[in-house]
Length: 398
Image 1 (spheres, helix red, strand yellow):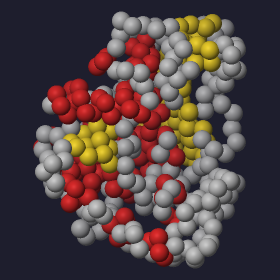
Image 2 (tube, one colour; image 1 turned 120 degrees about the vertical axis):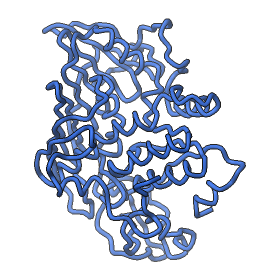
Image 3 (cartoon, one colour; image 1 turned 90 degrees about the vertical axis):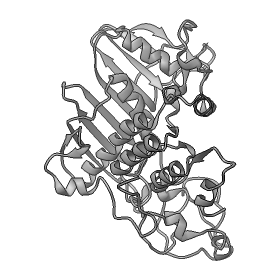
Image 4 (cartoon, helix red, strand yellow; image 1 turned 180 degrees about the horizontal axis):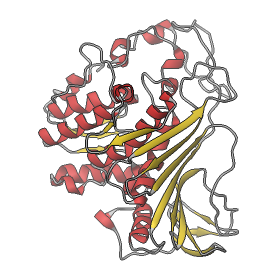
């Protein structure tokens, strides 16, 4: 079915999962909520800030569960890391740093229109395989106008379709808003912030390649909160060093056990948490280590199981735990059972979204957190939403 609204109208369906490109996350969620469907939606929860607030309003108005796919919220080890922090064992946490060091290759430049029969296409020019060619015959099975949805109407281009839509502002949010939201979420969670920062400054560029990509492959973003605490985020898509350290000659496996048979490496995708007594590093799978004092003396790790603490009866980690939690919350009817309700997801999603506004305008911005807007800045506030196409508008009144 090419029109998701027909699916939402089906009375036999109770819940839907939204794994569309980012520019469709909000409208599909609102439509589903209006039809009485519970929604699991991938991160980032929305393509812009306005949309995220409308998703929250739709969830509340139609009394449906909306879970955002921030998997770390459902990983037991990550929850135990947050408990360690909340118990004050690092002292006062004053700064967190999210890391998104994920190599991305040249996407090239291609003309508009379908590919020719027999033409080969490397979506990632450094990869060793070719993608299914987006020929005229292939595109006959694509409802392209529906795919564009809220985005501006334009001719088809292979580089603005799957997967490279991520690197174009009409549909995606760059890697700061692609892989980045997972680490933004943990960084905000660890810092203990349920409000927006008071200012943001983001800078970056698209280095090395000459291609059609619009988003930066290198970006540094700084956020300051009202109490002076800092959240820093680094996006690096080229060659880079990792950050943090692990204890010599050990590694943490996916289930949090310590293995001495492999060489440990510092993290490239993860979070650094800085406290007045020590610091913690958390990798993308929720494995964590702590260090204390000026000599970085090794402290507790996620390998030391604490079976006394299991919030929400989480089981392990990985992608399935958050789906299991979503289904359990749908069945219970209690929004508080969700590990990442849409409002929680929205607060973490806003961070990369406002960072990108700062980056695109090339200047620091100040925020009014209660209004979810920039302070006395019409140009920046215009970028908190978008111009929608007819029939694909995220409504102001859901």
